[in-house]
Length: 184
Length: 403
Ligand code: HEM
Ligand code: FES
Image 1 (cartoon, rainbow over the protein chains, first blue to last red):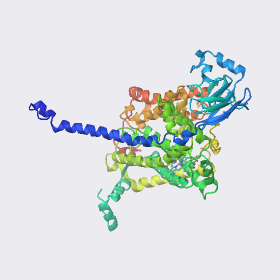
Image 2 (image 1 turned 120 degrees about the horizontal axis):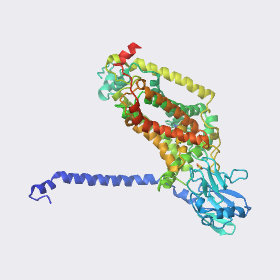
Image 3 (image 1 turned 180 degrees about the vertical axis):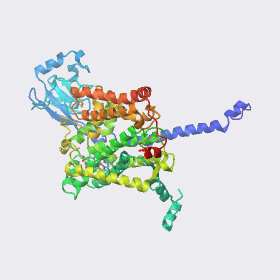
C-alpha cells in the first residue's frame, strides 16, 4: 500500500501513520490485558463459594402462634416471620395501591396470607427495623418502624413513610410442608 | 543548595545520594515567612499525629485479631491483659480525634487566609485527598473493635453505595464480600486500615513537595519578596513547631488520662449484634457535619450525592473564589462570611448528632443549603460584586515593622 507514486499516497504510507496505528493498537491491547489481569483480583472480593453455600435455611413454623413474630438468620441477615392476624391481613389487602410509595399488592408478597416472610433489613441504609418483639414500636402502620432515620412499614412490610425507597424484601422461599419453609 | 561537609562519611553519602543536602535545604535553611502565627502550627501537628497513629497502630496490630468471633475480645484483651495495652489503644483512639481536630483547624486556616489560591491549588487539592483518605482510614479503623457502633456504622455507610442506580446493590455485595457486613468485610477493612495510612504518608510527601515549591502562605497573604521577609526554618520554626507539639500533648493528655472515652460512644463496648440495631446510630464526631448533610436530603441518592458533593466543592474551591486577594484580613466581607460559614459548620456537626426528626431536620436542611450557598453562590458571584478589599501592605517586612 505504501508504493503509490502520488504525494498524497506517500504521505499516507509514511512511518508517521503506521507508527500511530501501532501505538494505538498496542495501547488498546495493554488496556485490555491490564483489565483482564485486574478482574480476577477485583472478583476475589465478591462472595466466596463458602459464603454462597450458606445460603439456605429451613424453618419449622409450628411453634409460632397467631400474632406472633420470630426472627431467624439467613445469609447473616435477620429474616422476619410473622403469623399475621385476620385484621392485619385485611388492612394489608385493602390498602389502595395509590397510597404506596412502592406499589405492590399484598398478594404478591406472600405465599399464604397468614405467613408474612421478610428480610428484616431497612431498604434505606440497612438497619434492622423494630416491631418483632412485644412492646417495640411498630410505627404508624402497625408493621415495623426503623429508628435509624424513621421509616414506617405496614403489615405487609411495605414502605409507607420515611426515607426508605422500597418495601422490605421478600426472600425466596418455598413451603416444604404446611408448617415448615425453606428460605433461599 | 551548596552543601559541603567536613565529615568524610557524610560527604561520601552525599556524593552518591543527595539526601543530606535535600534535608538541609528543606528543614534547615528553608526560608519561611517571618510573620506566621500559631495557626501555622497545625500542619506539623497533623504530621505528628499521623506518625503517632502509625506507631501505635502497628503495635495494636500485633495483638489484634481480625475475626468476627475474636475481634471484640482481642481488643478487650489489649485493654486488660496486654502490658500497657490500655495506654496504646487509648492513644490510638484519642489521637484519631486529635488528628481530625488538627486537620480541621489546618483547613479552616487555609480557608481564612486564602491558602488555596494560585499558586497553591495543587497543594490544597492534595490536602483534600489526604482528608478523604483519613476519613476512609478512620471509618475502617472504627469497625475493627467489632462493637455495636462498629457494625452498624459499617452497615449504614457501606449501604450508601446502594443508592447508585443499577449497579449499587452489586457494589455493596462486592464491598462486603457477602450478603451483609460479616467476616470477609472485617478482614478486608483490617487490610485496608493497615495500608491506607502509608498511602497518606505518600500523599503527605507530595503535599510537602508542592509546599516547598510554592512556599508557605502567611497571615498577610502576600508573597515573600526577599530575605528581609523570611526566617530560616531552623531554629525559628522548628522550635515554634516543637512548642506547639508540647501544648498539643498537654491537651491530648487531658483526654487520654482523664476522659479517654469522652469522644467515643458507649455502645461500642457492646459486641456487634447483626440482629439488633442500636436505637440511635451516630458516627464518630468528626463525621457528624457530613452525616447531617446526608440526612438532610429526603432522597436516598440525593443525600449521598450531597454528602460527597460537600467535599467535592472543596476540591474546586480554588476556582470558585474569584478574589485575587488571599487573606481575609483585607477582605471585609469574606471575613464576616468566613465566620458565618464556620458557625454553620459547627451547627451541622451538632445536628448530625441529633435524632433525624422535627426541627432538627429542618435546621439540617437550612444549614446544608447554606454550606453549598457559601461555596457555589456567595464566593463566585456575590462577593465579587459587593466587596471592596482593603489596601495590601507593600511587603511582609514593612507590615511587621509597623505593628
Ligand atoms: C491515619 C492514621 C490512622 C487513623 C486515623 C486510625 C484510626 C483508628 C480508629 C478510629 C480506630 C478505632 C479505635 C477504637 O475505637 O477502638 C482504630 C483501630 C485500630 N487501628 Fe487504626 N488508625 C490509623 C492508623 C493505623 C495503623 C497504621 C495501624 C496498623 C498498622 C492501625 C491499626 C489499628 C488496629 C489494630 C485497630 C483495632 C484496635 C482498637 O480498636 O483499638 N491503625 N484506628
Ligand atoms: S436505615 Fe432505616 S430509616 Fe435509614
